[in-house]
Amino acid sequence: MNTFEEYLEELSRQHPVILHGKKDKCHFSSLADTSQTRFALKMHYPCVVVDSGDFSFSGGVGNVLINTEFSVMFLDHVKDTGNNKEITDVFNNMKKVLLDFARKFSRDRRNLKYKFLNRFRLIGSEGHRIYLQDSGLYGYVLFFNSDDSFNDMDCDNVFKD
Image (cartoon, rainbow, N blue to C red; front, side):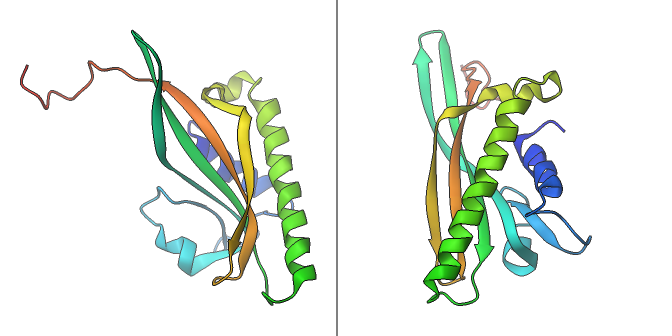
């Protein structure tokens, strides 16, 4: 296991709420996968979905960092989108799952087995409610940031200098 996505997939397999039951049921998706369609077609709920994309540059001269934002969504399906109690229960449950993942992440960052997690920061991360009403999906998203060195010498020789 060397990537954040693989790490989250493994946690999804272990968490009692998200737990992968049968092989044909999918409870985890990385939107960076080439098989994004499984999210729409084969997902079973509750589930965890991870995506990355937004980034920024920080640091100083000689030490430029590229900061990538990862969105980790904890979602469950609601049968009746007009049932406020069911929606509230899903929000409460998904928040507990998010906090379980955050606690495990915080502990695992200290484990040498997961040294790749040291690129990520829990402090400063934000969690927000998600309302995907058309799909009947509700839950939370947690935004993680990852800092990596940005090497301006590595441009794959695409420019003629």
